[in-house]
Length: 273
Image (cartoon, rainbow, N blue to C red; front, side):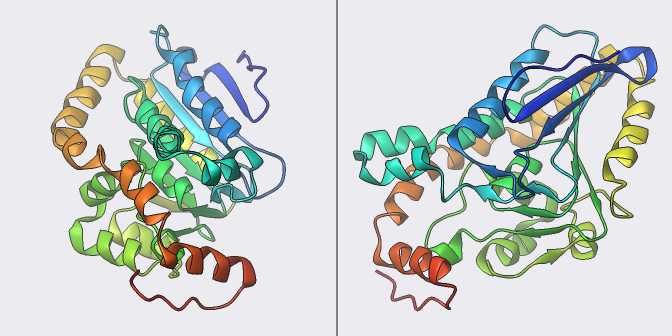
């Protein structure tokens, strides 16, 4: 039988599948939006520690609610809003929570699979590309809205997206920020590995996880780690600066215009300052 943690937004079930080698991490705020508040990000970062000394789990599936993987950063989170009044140093520090959460998932030793239903937006996509595999329902869609809000796409996600989709598709996905990326396009571009009927993403991820869990655990971990090391070897060279870029773009007039237009549900007019 699996066991569950007592966190507010994140629950863990271990001991599933062949020889109990599969775990499911469920992120669900109960509102069908599943936005990343500061608390939610801390829980999603910290839950990876549940597997640091766990040699029994070979595969970890991360899933959201039945209608949303995540809508990304929670613009209504009071703790997140307080960042605007903070000093530059404090703002950079707080902006590094998302990257730390994403990196924690990327560095997990078990194979990781995102099971995605509904929307996967902004930080939701940033977290999803930190995992090894992504399965989604047919109606799922992806969107990376940061640029249209007047800021950069951060959390160390650009090199991960480039590794999956290549440079041109990553530019298209990130620069054309209001475009929805359908599950079919996501599959074609390499953003996801499998599209299934709605409501079946977790079941499909579980079936795939069972195949991985049946393999000998030691070489599986070695293979994942080696491939990740080659893939991410140069990531830190560019990603170290994206928190500072986020704070910098957050000081611009275009950022104020982008976020104001979003709240007022109108098209923004940017002036490059």
